Image (cartoon, rainbow, N blue to C red; front, side, top):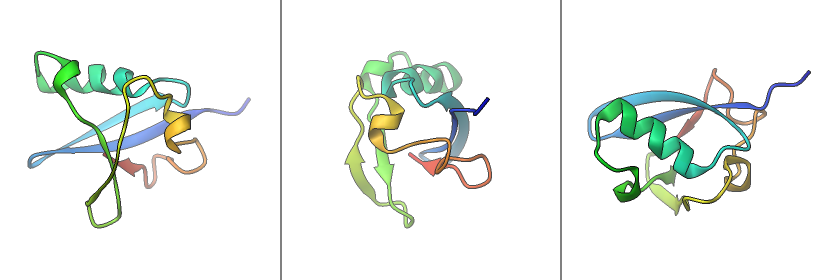
Length: 85
């Protein structure tokens, strides 16, 4: 049984949030998780970006895309180093 769990560190202003999800979940699923944590009224108004190692925005993540389609997998988004959004 292989886990398809992926881990993220989300940077929002000066705060950092840690989320875990499944590869098949969508970007909108992540937005809804984040909206619940941050008390933002609507996940629809959020933008999630793939960041490079320096924190620069490299790719806007589209709501309907599965996390695996965005390049995130259990192999590259482990809890030890995660991914930045």
